[in-house]
Length: 301
Length: 301
Image (cartoon, each protein chain N blue to C red):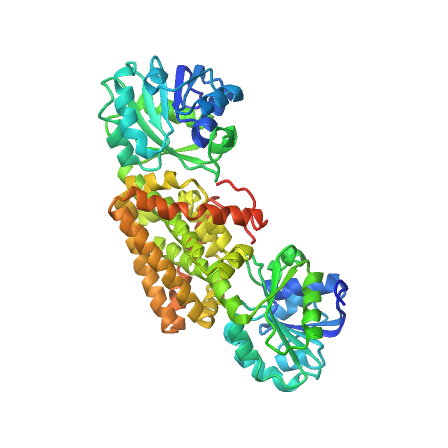
């Protein structure tokens, strides 16, 4: 059924923040489900998603949300996966598809997989899309357009279920990549988790400068620092969970980075112009590759 | 003469890359000089700036370029300052103003100041503006609009000369900040030099990954890594000179960053969720300040 949009009887989205509410908007716009159920802990959020018209029903209890659902999208922080899976496991209907949007896939599979009953399909996913904002009002249907969505189905997953989830993301405008979960976690540790860990650190370092220097760091942030504040703008509890759940890969990439940073520091300390140059020059090809693959456009500060 | 554009008989710009050629375009558009002289080492560059119509004369010899000039703008890499100052010193006319656009100001003053004869005014400057491109074709007159230009006149500099250089940058659309050179170097080490050093390092780290991982790092770079390739896109010889010339301040900020990175690494390794959260949460106010000061706008990835 490649190329045609999927159609669900009931679809439940657990967690209606930026990503969950954006996907609900897509499913609404593309008429992908007869009934859209949103599950949110806070009464205020439930009232808001009803008001926005992006769900037909808003419920507090995940077990109630998934009852009778053909598709369940887990869009909460990684730290809540295990508890959620225990809560919804017994209430899933046979043949249902469970997918998620989390940034670490080995842990997603470990947490979500075991509590699921036989006959329920787990197709973990990770849309590479975001903004610095959160909550149901921050979402928009175009969030996933021209973005990658990586799916990491465990060995033996029903290919029809994988294709259904792929078709869902294609309806959102995304391009699909199927990847091994371990490989995903390693690649994303480098492309996303380490950059965020470093950006949060450097912005944190700036907060401990003397007050007069700190004010001017903000004022003159266009020199490069601004871009780090942007990367470090997402809500911290999201990244705490990512660092904890993809810990091994994050530490591995961090250690490689730290080695390289030490080498560059040594070259600067020794005023070794050639060694500095050799290290800096390595980066030019990567930037060209990023532009060539359409992952970024020309830029000015 | 605040508010009115300066007017020079002859203005010479030494180095006609991104910044130098952009300033020449401003001076041409605003008719700030009777004669615009561009100084470039390469014959090809000299031919090009004449062809672009942004200079009246293109010369190879800096001594020839500055002869009879009322304003001299040094827009070459910091590493070339000392040699240039020796070459032009004897040829400067009394009352001439020498300014520059370099990213480190203590070293700019140390290199440019002593060889200048009495009666020549040194007003070091640093426009906080750039793109990832270089060369005379990359320049454009709007580069400095709504950007800061920091001036760091040494104690005792003639206020009229400072005001003339300030008026030049206001004509380019910039806002002026007067700063102590040492303070400038410390602030910029944090806002610009350290971010670039780190960005070059992480992009370099990615170039040493196994080939299959490396290809996917580029493919999925929108997750954060892309922004680092952007920061690390400038020509490496430029940053080599910055790191070498502002070495003390860069090492100082780098050591503070490294301490903070070690603390966060330890928290991740120990799976200490509270400690991770405490470190990540420090960054939220800084981002709000950056937005509030108009140094960035909302952003999505």
